[in-house]
Image (cartoon, rainbow, N blue to C red; front, side, top):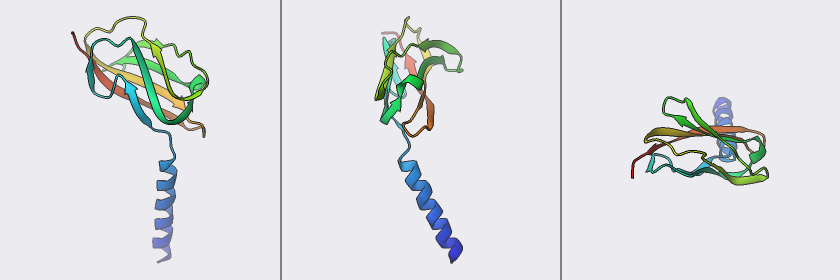
Length: 118
């Protein structure tokens, strides 16, 4: 019985902590979107992040770097982005993001999207 109570307590603790982690809410381009070559890329999180410690990159589907984007904002914010310096050729890409939440946790991931010819 004690083991069951401890297991339940651990599960509740883990669930509570997971609820408070910063999560990606949306992006431009959106996840799995088919778009013409975007002029900018941005990400929006569930809470403010440390933009000065953040990065955005455009990757090919094989994860090779196409362009590292220059983020100009430096203040804490839930949304940050940057312009692309050149048009993307038609194909599959990933918007790679890396940031640090207010509580110091690293947050990173990829948003897949496809560039189409208009």
